[in-house]
Length: 419
Length: 163
Image 1 (tube, rainbow over the protein chains, first blue to last red):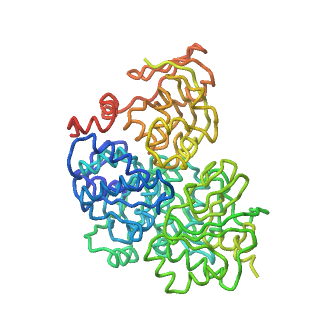
Image 2 (tube, helix red, strand yellow):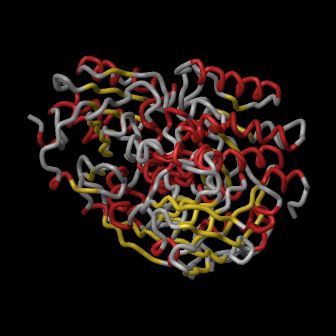
Image 3 (cartoon, helix red, strand yellow):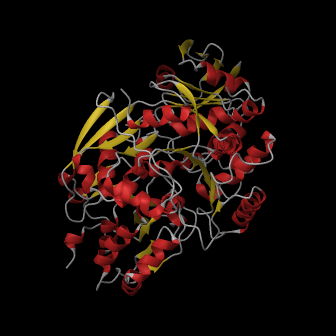
């Protein structure tokens, strides 16, 4: 009778069965935080009065938001965090030069596998659901309690099923699918629920597509997003991790509050207009929107397939005069792979700026903040008022293909518009 | 007993407007409070009196998990947030840090800016003193009541009460 999510929760609570609405205490396979959320967590942790974390192998700390240090205050926060990581002998603390954007880095380093239950002090922790894990975002106090006890309280969610069929069209990727879904159900359409992705179409989505989709489950208000595990998932896990994994499939009689049929072949390139991720239009309905900046990267779309897509569009072309285009490979390994595949040369020759991994402008931190009246097309995940800078700037969310094509034409465009 | 004047907002008040990321290079509660709601309500931190109440509609606190958001609201002097629904991470964070919150569709639709409102957290009864009406909020499950009365998750953990 249980969904994938409910099965993982039951196992980690030591129960045979859980039901929606039930409050349970679960054992954590991983607790993580970044340079914004961990300093607050450390202060709370220190109040608890334990002298070490529950398991120094299972606490992960990644300075990615305002790192490399964006100003003195951020440098102090990173220093505070670094000292804590050293004191607690945290195995998985990733320094500048080793770090990447947390939600790309953590799967890449094999720290989460199918069947795991993880919490992270960052809302996009739901990303690891692509691996068939239960992963959810929490605040700093939950991170502190988790670091101290290795446990967390959770309410068992109901679930929504997304039955995927068909294959993606040219230029369409996981980002368009998830934006389409969020546009359809709204920013609270999955409030407190699991978004469970299944169906034969699932096999036609790459792991990068699935990471993108699971990443944005939070933008529909979901507790978590999770994909059924298939051969691609197992191959990814084996390639990156030595950890034991466990595959949970939903019961045939699992209860879902709603089921949506998603025909991947019908999905068009989709863009979220300001100032909500659910304010979506397809590329056919966009009209004439000029842009000042294009951002390609982030925990949503900073992986190798995203960079390949962008490079294939930029090859032999130039960024439009006046458009700042900034590329953020999400990890050092991705950066290196992009370099070896010749992608960085293509991007730089086209007039893009290529950055070291960082969250940067996604949350208006650094490396591409917007001035009053400016517009950015971005492969990031949120476009609330003031998200990328001035409260009177605008962010349009899109796929790497759209962000690249738009950088070339100077207005929101599809690669099909390019000569 | 909580009592104060209401500041009213609509749907989807997100954590980027509650506390913009440009201020997240600090965890100092007072500094955060000074910038609370700045991008949608420039004078918020100046006009709020200790004990005032935020009433909002759907999906309050959506977006980022930043605990700085309920912290800024609490430190600014807000005694309780009443909304039709809360985003889930904000909901957890508010309970964890001891910022009282209540869900009531009726209250969120009926209460207006400037109304004088009082709240009994034990019963969940919200009284609109200005309009002479009462509304009843959804009660918390027992575990959450324990968290709130222990003044947050850290105190709860310290007391070793986690079953």
